[in-house]
Length: 173
Image 1 (cartoon, rainbow, N blue to C red):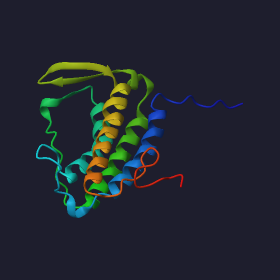
Image 2: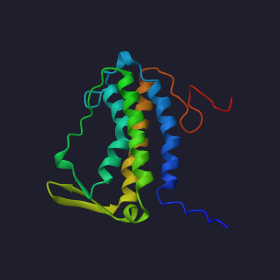
Image 3: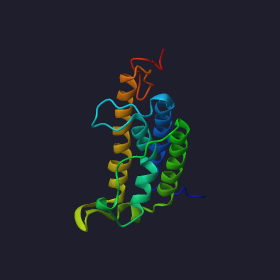
């Protein structure tokens, strides 16, 4: 009798990534291309920069956790200003593929292994890679997608269903 392989520690996150990618796509599909340079406040990112950031988080973090550490001083955290919505949607598709590949290939030993965040060579913290995937990839992604939904609301764009009804859509109606 054949035995089934045990799921890896990253398998639930891979399933979550797939579900959340569809939700993220719904939100990004609402971004009006003629408003990509709009900002709600001088300190805020433009709509295009925020949408670009939301699109690229999974793949960017996946590439980051494949390393032993990451030095924040070596990175510019200002998202690029896209010219088209298509650029953003293409970035999302590639980002999700990169994250899928990372999670599919990550062994349990590697997932539980230490990963360090550094600043100018000084350690800020160390945590298991799987915790970085949870907090910096997934939770961080949801945080910025929530910001994106506020931008849409401020622009009077109907906010899509994210986790149940929005003021504009009811999936149960």
